[in-house]
Image (cartoon, rainbow over the protein chains, first blue to last red):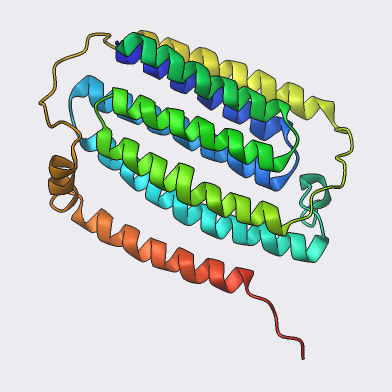
Length: 99
Length: 164
């Protein structure tokens, strides 16, 4: 199986993640869309690692997964905090910085 | 067999992400996301990355999805969403997305398509661990500090304020 197919799949998944981020309007689903984009980038990294027969790409993916776990913990805590203050998590209602 | 598995897993992952875009219920979204993560783990295994595939399924489909489910449980989301007011944001997003898509297609076309052979233990835990604890030792240690900071930060953010 040629790695090119994996690159195309990662491109499709990244675009779908971006689309989901733009279409959805609650913070949790937008957060999930970000995770999809991260995973698509990970797939491209692993495909590149296979293409070049070098383990560095896999190490990068390892770090990305670790940082994504930390990011999910902090991000979801922030979402919980916003919910406690505003009683909803619609992005349209969070407009404190809007001029 | 490998080609069949690739198309099967690619179909499952793309279909679950599309279904996630179409569904509005957050719990179903989380479930579909777990399916997408698991099939991506299978794709990693196809690319001779068995260790990363395992990590993907344990951390993404396990830990991170449990976090999401817990937060969905704590938040009451039964209010309906009003229709989108500014349509031009979507149009702009679609336009930017099309540009990114075309650019990346052009980049992918320049890549070499041949698959060189890898060592039999390529992607196994042993060579990955050797690399992780030699060349990437500082990055590894800094990541552990980052994880501690994230734990403390999320505990601090999510705590209940005491009533005075």
